[in-house]
Image 1 (cartoon, rainbow, N blue to C red):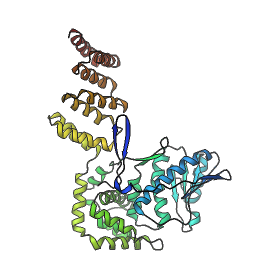
Image 2 (cartoon, one colour):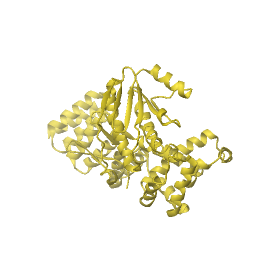
Image 3 (cartoon, rainbow, N blue to C red):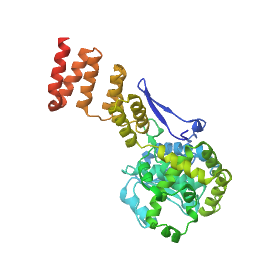
Image 4 (cartoon, rainbow, N blue to C red):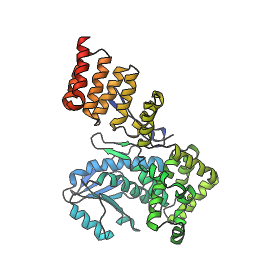
Length: 411
């Protein structure tokens, strides 16, 4: 079961979002938000401070943060916060950079969570409207949530879940969150080969000393990068493994806000050890990574099956690719080809049109639509599509479309 994956399908022109059982019972918190003193906006879990010019963005931002909070806590089930999480919003890049530099000694793009021992100083700082805002906000908002409850969580939980939840995108028009699983790092994890960090090592990283990292043949920077991507892989594995998923959620209950990251890591490992044989878990982890395919892997395998005449396997792979990237034109186009060859002309046309919507080669698809309509016996529609293909790219399609239109006319 994909514990958090949001599967998308199109039916009768409507976008359907199917949430897994885990999140069917999340209670979305009422916002009860109101503006105070012209620059502070409060909601159930957040206090948002607007710097000059950013006031109008606060209601939408509060809605996004509350939705994210509810998804996070639908998994972690932490107790209610006694104080709200603070957020500061800038519209001016210079003011944002000055504010961050004064605290970190360097700037950070888009958004950054500033964590201090004193709770009242902690805050998520956002540069509204910057190109990096969306991706950095998704990442840093989770870090703020986790460290707001557990100031020193295991590092693999912080890094792995932050990357996992980075794929949770906010739709400001519909005011909803949409999850599209991002497997872009899967190839990188697989590429580590024998140097891939194993589950036990990932979980116990907070107990590893710097000299041990160097002894492993990695620089500190290299270890940090490998650890980050392997933490994401471990989180993905645990969320998609029935028995281990249960142990994962139980491990959240042993986290304490009053101890170090090392102590929290040990507590979580102790909880896993009760139910987990790590040699078996490692085999399952490696098998899981092997069976997971990226979008590119699915498309390549699907094209190979299609070219060798195995339409059934090709269709399954293209549909799987579509689940990963519902806004990519290529799976729609190939599914259109398959359905055309199965004489399902209406369905083929629907997929062709979807591929056009998402940016496919317009001349190519219009030609395919013309051929499809001609095979369905719809001469007028066929002529329309074919003429458009020829107009868009006469060098490729003028001769072919003229011949096909002539045959349609003669019939």
